Amino acid sequence: MKKFMDDNFLLSTNTAIELYNNYAKDMPIIDYHCHLIPKEIYENKTFQNVTEAWLYGDHYKWRAMRANGVEEDYITGGASDYDKFIAWSKTVPMTIGNPLYNWTHLELRRYFDVHDILNESTAHEVWEKVNAKLTNGEFGARDLITKSNVKVVCTTDDPTDSLEYHQKLKEESNFDVKVLPSFRPDKGLEINQEGFIQWVKKLEEVSGIEISTYDHFLAALENRIEFFHSLGGRVSDHALNTMMYVKTTKENAAAVFAKGINGEVVTVEEEKIYKSITLEFLGQQYAKLDWAMQFHIHALRNNNSRMFQQLGPDTGYDSINDGELAKPLNQLLDALEQKNALPKTILYSLNPNDNYILGTTIGNFQGGGYPGKIQLGTAWWFNDQKDGMLDQMKALANLGLFSRFIGMLTDSRSFLSYTRHEYFRRLVCDLIGSWVENGEVPYDMELLGEIVQGICYENAKDYFNFQ
Image (cartoon, rainbow, N blue to C red; front, side, top):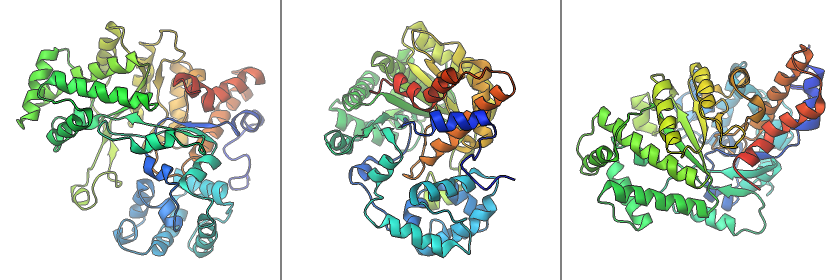
C-alpha cells in the first residue's frame, strides 16, 4: 500500500519517477489562460483568512458543498468565514475520488506546509495554521505567483477594458512575472444577448471610433486588438458555447449588425451570418499580429434559472453542452486558411466526446513552419482531472504529436491553483513512463526529458514567443 500522496504520488513506475524529479518538477510555469484579476496582482492582494483565499469564487468547491447538502448560506451566503471553512472541511472527506480531494491537500502542503488530512476534526487546527501564515505578510497575490515559479500570466480581458493595471504592472521594476492581457470579445459576438447595444457604445467610447456601421465596428475591434498588442497581448479567447458557421458575405453580416444595434430581433440563422464573418475578421487580425486564437467550445451555462437570478453567472450551475461541431469548426478554419490568414489556434471542448473530433481537426490545418500550430487544448474545466487529462493526452498522442503539446493552464480565479500544474506534470510523466515500461518507447532519457520539459514549459514559451 502506498502512503497517501507521498513523493511518488501519481507516479507508478521508476521511469515516471525519474522523469518527474529530474525534468518536470522544477520547470517554470506559463499560465496562458486564467481568470485572475490584474488589479489584485498589482496591489499584491492579501487574504484575511483561508476562506477568503480558498472559497471565495471557487465554484468547483461550491458544487461539491451543495452536493453534500450544505445550505447556501454557508457557501455564498452570509455565514461567517469560519463557519464556511468548517462546512468545506466537513465536505472534503466526501470528495474522495474527485480531484478536489487531491488539490485541497496539495495546496495545503505546497503553500502552507500543512500536512494534516482536512476533515471536521482537524478543521480548527488547519484554520489556525494556514491563517497564521496568510497574515504574516508573505502570502499576497504576487507572492503566491512567485512561489509557484510562474513566469507569465495571461489574464482574460474584455476589449473595452482600460487595461490600467496591465500598464502599471508593465512599469513595475520589482516584479519579474509578465502579466499580459488576453482579448475576449464574447460580448461583441453575442448579438442576441441583453446588453449588446450598451457594449457597442462602450467600445465606441474606448476606441474613439463612432460606430454606426459594421465597418466602424470592425475598425473599433481592430483598434482594441492593437492596444492589447501594445501591452504584450498575444492571445485571444472565445467562448463558443454553440459552434456556428455559414458561408456568407460581409454585406449580409453588416445587415444583421444593423438590426442588432437597432434593437431588432436577430434570428438564429442571422446570428450565424454575423458570427461567421466577425470570427473570420478577428482571425485575420490575430494572424497578422502572430497571436494565438483560443476557442472554448460546448459549455452550457447558467442552467439553474432561480439560482442565476439570485447569484449571477459563474456560480456553479454550468454543465457540458453538445451539438454540431465538426463541420462548422472545420469550415471556419478552412475559410481563414483559404485567405492564408489562419492564426495559431488552440481548440478546447468541455465535452470529452469531442476529443477525437478536435484531434482530427487540428491535423487538417497544421503547417506554416510552426510545430503544433493548431493545438488540442488541455483538458478543460470538468475534464481537468486524472481521467480527463489522460484521455485528452492519449487522444492527442494517437492522432497527432503529443511531444508538441503546449501543456497545462489553470483557467482559475484562485492564486492557489498552480498546484494543478504539478498534478498535470505527474500525469504526463506517468503516461510516458508507462509507455517505456511496456516497451512501447525506448528508455532514452535525453529524448524523453526534452519532451517532458517541452510539454511543461518550453513548447508554450516558443508557441507564444515569450522570452
